[in-house]
Image (cartoon, rainbow, N blue to C red):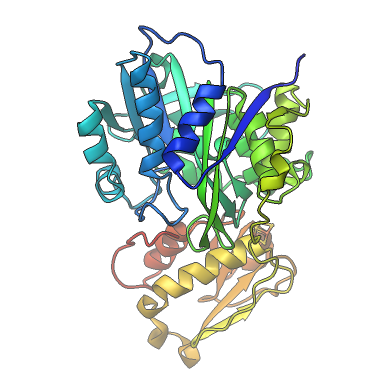
Length: 393
Ligand code: SF4
């Protein structure tokens, strides 16, 4: 098998960099084909924060396609729970862009889902997805480069999670602990790798013009990187993108597993050859997190940063709404990670590791759990006020 080709361009002008990458790739003739663009538009965010794909990059992809005479172009995403695509598209300027370019905008969650079987899946055997996915001939994945507190990085493969229907995404966080036992990775990594068995983007264009470092995917910091990375082998693109963010691709579990699944472990050929001169070592999510909040008694002897970062962001957003006055000493006891002690009735046990200790307490499953589910469980136990309102967690 010949090595896949990946193109990298460095330019402060994001539009020019995107066009330069597309021009350097030998793309097939797409005349008469239905083209679907899948940027990262899963969160309500400003354009230049490294949280969503920048509109300028999307615009360059559309202009390139339309310059070739391709007219049947659609763009869509399915956001994280609690958000509406319409609001995200409006805030990002994508609604206006679609009108200007004459392309179709899709909310992937609008219609009931299709179910895809994943017979050889390790962690997941079937998945509910955007129902019209199979009607498209050419899928263009346009992620934004991010560090990620749960999956190390978020690039082309991780961005495909947006093809999963609504709350079905959360199922990937709630798999049994042994779902990845054979692979030495977390169940979530294995499930994301399983997606590579059924989702096959034809082209990936990574927006690394403004990336996100630190506590990604939404609570980190933007970092100007000024790169666009593209290729027709999306796993090869992710391999090169990981290198350029200072991460060893072999240590990104979901990417390593997906490359094993497809049998494509060849090192890509990169244009230009000296692309690593543009490497920017992005700050990783913190390996350990230590924090205190008034009214919270935390026991976390061996907790991963994935659970701790979820908890940190949850408490920042929702602690004022937790009904502490109902609890003894007006304190909520929270236990996270392996080795926690069994506890009493109104204690919160967070994550699959705590299951066996949680017999008398309140258990939130997940590895790691997601904020909306923590909120839901507290709500069921009358321990929090109001409705869940997504705050980019
Ligand atoms: S601490 Fe959380 S993320 Fe780590 S293994 Fe346990 S449940 Fe999973």
